[in-house]
Length: 482
Image 1 (cartoon, rainbow, N blue to C red):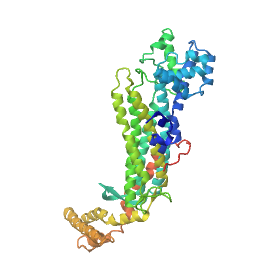
Image 2: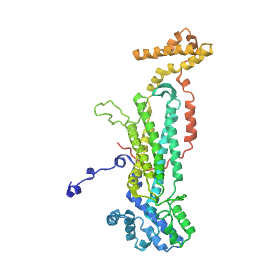
Image 3: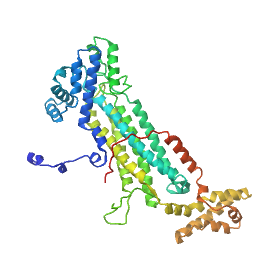
Image 4: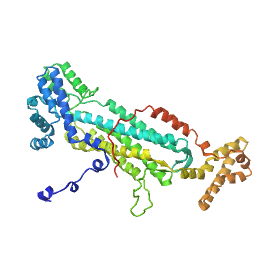
């Protein structure tokens, strides 16, 4: 391809990241944008200069004021010109900042190493990203909680091994997804609260440059770090670092996002199966097309998207674990390109997942007739334990009774397979000379009698663990992608 061909390319001729372009919100995209990162770097240079001024270093109030006044005068094209010459991103930004704040040019980045801005900014952005993920997750949790409450008492066929087992309720099954999501929210809230700032550590983490600036006064070095952290909203600072903060924290934070991928994949898979059975359906637009060849189809497109995005999210934490394991001594630069890709991708993917998840949970519908039909088909088999216990209490031999019920159950199942219709097991049991009197004395097999404590468990969980959660913050609306 010639240079002239390159210059004629439109936006549609170039690769774009589909997570950002198609699925994630503008809010999350902006958080990881070059402009936002440049602003955070400048914020760090400002608070460093301000703290150095307060502690008596040769930084004037006028210089700090000039840095503040020019904080948003960012020309990324000019930065790119500097970087093309200097081959160093941080120095390119320092030169560009110095051009718009010439009176402060000489004190920008005083005593600091590049990781003062790069790593501290990453941690600030990580925490802001966790705030956004947390808020979107709360929205999904509260949407699902409403579904669980509305369906807490609706009997449904419970499955183990994907085979009919005992009854549960529609709400209790969904509450299992809810519990996983609530647990993930607490994990995210915990890691956000424990996340420290790298702080003011110098080139290899020894703070030697700042100790020199303060003429050997270690107390002032410690106070400088405390003030810088406080000014950017952090109460905790890493006690020890090399040049970078410990990269295992990237794995730790993104690993929590990976847990979200795990539980969403599970819930979305269950929903896909339930839609296949016809019991529960995800939202479906009136003009939505399910298949180009089969006009009648209503595919669980959004749940499938959730599984696909979750699978992508799950692939990211292992790479960051490898990155953390292979850092040498105080640092090596082979982490840089990997982190630039992996960390934003994890947050953008989480954002995309949660936008879709809230839409699905807020619009899920139950198909009562299908749920009731499937319950009715299998309930007689599930009542066998009640019959067995009743017959034993009348003096029968448990093993003989068990075998009698088993044979009749298999005959009923075979008749269902061959002829369809209603389950004939109760009639077969009532006609049996041994079991008949016991079965005839039992009340009608109301499904509600066979769901155990599922409704109570669901309501108790909603009124306990979910009611204690905070309300989500107001976020700009995020439109669900096609």
